[in-house]
Length: 305
Image (cartoon, rainbow, N blue to C red; front, side):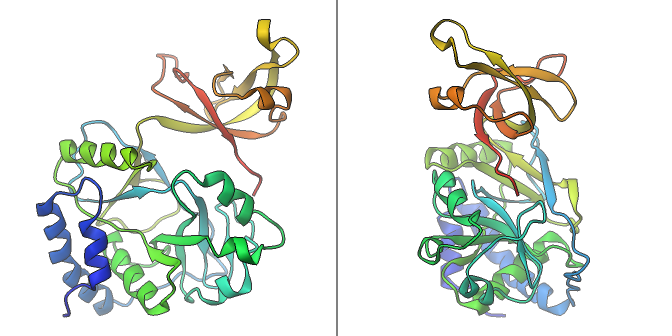
């Protein structure tokens, strides 16, 4: 079995927060993973019946990361390729250029459309256009972290993604770097370094887990702050300096509870607030005993998909 490609070794070596020992462990495991991925026949999902994505749960502080593969959480737009059609996580088709779609392999992939750290708004404006802007799409990367529907544990699906994308030979089509982290302390150090460099957080995927759609205990997200999506059900009027503007959005949480979300709104957003029926993302630190978010702050409107 050949040694892992230089580009992959360099990617692992430069992973923020990854210790030398953990990096060596990941490199030593790769030949076995590559061999296993080829030895086992991976059964691809039928594109006609594929429906859904894996959704992550929040990571519990102090939990051991042993048995998990860890990667950066990219602030991009989720994109699922079923071998023929590229879709948002909602199932709506993404209008990508023909050259972009024709270069994708004929296997199911799951990942993020991404430009750069801190460039979500610019990316979102490009990938949600009904008619693709060919030049703007040249700056878009497809960062792939899974092969949905393949009958193999995640560790083997990672190897499958790496070898499949290497064969495609497209610089914008990249596997997400995965590594092992020894303990909770090292995981926090990796999180802090990732965030310091402008990253959003980390993802943790159980190495032995089979793929399944929906919210699962096999996939977790770790961020400095929690986030959640809620439905705008009303607007509260502003007072004082905000008189004549929206003071807060009345937001309904997934649990059905409602709260006022005012922090994080710009004056422009207060003059033209997200309408009733819009979904918004908000960040918060923790929850009250009744389940409401503490120190919630508006982040963005979730674009229709």
